[in-house]
Image 1 (cartoon, one colour):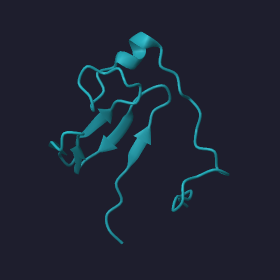
Image 2 (cartoon, rainbow, N blue to C red):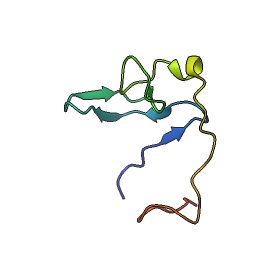
Image 3 (tube, rainbow, N blue to C red):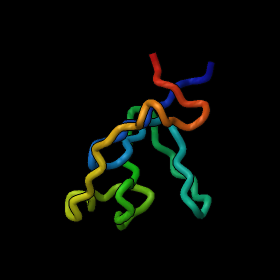
Image 4 (cartoon, helix red, strand yellow):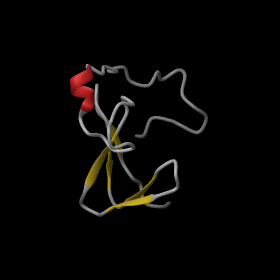
Length: 81
């Protein structure tokens, strides 16, 4: 099996991605997150530096605390053991 990368969904906040990983934006620009570093990816849609979080979610009151519904997951997704 290949390396497992972790993306952490913060309640009412960004997606936290731990490096090493590449983030590819809609224009195809590749951003390298180095090993030992992490970056927040915008989830509220209002960041001034998308795809990265600039903490605008605090100012606009973004709230999305729900987790994934275990009975309605996308194909190929299961809870890790």
